[in-house]
Length: 558
Image 1 (cartoon, rainbow, N blue to C red):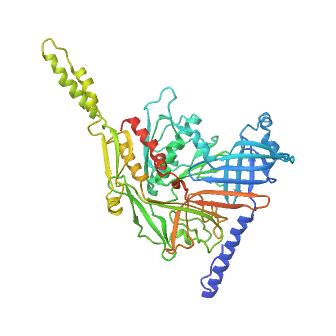
Image 2 (cartoon, rainbow, N blue to C red):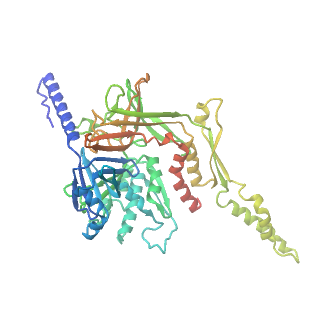
């Protein structure tokens, strides 16, 4: 790092800054030119091979889901033979599972072997294809028990429910399942995720751990609150709508000997996967850049909920100060919600493709329901039976309340307080005179319950106005893609469109990063901004966000 002497003349200072900038560019280019380090580890995380004779490698990380790594390798090479020889690995005590780590540009990708495939062609060439899944896949193999502290034959209460800032909540839920896996019998403190309260919890033998985060720290970060309810739901299915709704991202890193400890005092075994949930978006806290123009720069907005907590709105962030970390020499990481990387289509090489769609909102009101709110049908039934039982006062007549209730139930059941309607005044004002009217978000649910509010919100989300886009950049130059670079998975980044006279900058979160190379092509990153899923079916997307939470509340009868 170059230190600028302020006693120098202005020209000399400018030259010094320029030289420091050129040196940093040279170092970043050197990072791109160092070949990736691909290592294969056995099931006990003992190093077996360094991959150096591969035909090609392609690896991708997806925000909030499993990515795939694929290696094509000669079969007659020791690496190919070892990958194929599952029986030999078991005989030697190396176990069946194969771990992979890929280090490149100060980033580490890791995962477990999914399958190996052997192909032979007419020329006699034999190629091994090894497919791995990223470490996020392991989270899909945990289920959130109703009570993780009790055995399976006694699960009381019948449903697990908790609330809190999304980063803390997800960490807590996963940590409880990891403790259940390890049979931990430690006493539960008031805040299980607070590093100061975890006491003597020994995690030195765990293959996966959660990075501690206290409730107070998560509150101080201002992360969006969420509610989680589960009765043996899959962790991924439970966590995915929470992560998408709060724009929180899972970060999983493979800890290897020699790495700095992931938190002070961590005592971890070589190869442990360390999981954390991080808010890199800032949409609900400091404000996130959601667009702008090449003339005015990026505009930050803060998303807020309106009074009914069903629809949301955005307001302009008035704090336009540049984050202090952007002035720290050597720092390349972007501040939360403030992207560093903006690609200019037509001016900077590296643009591969983009696909965009603008969709207007539909409908000004959403309806839901079908069943009366809890207690209504029961109250009517009790009233009918009480009145009917008055016949017992007539000599010779038995109480007829039960018979009367059986006859009248089809007429009164689910007729009172069985439907809800929410109307958006903003949509009514913005859509114009000719418009779609209403949308049935779901029928068959109980009205005037917590779950019905979530269903209404899902309905507004499904019919909202949105811009869906998918942008890919190869290499990313002049920006450095990587964990310590200018942009990485779940960071915000932007791009412009050639020929767009508005000069608008389109900004979204990085949904996927892919690393690939072969014998003729050097390693190159391909980055995707925006997941493009909204280009398919927004209604299905909405239900993936909310159906898990809705069904959980319905089980509780809320």
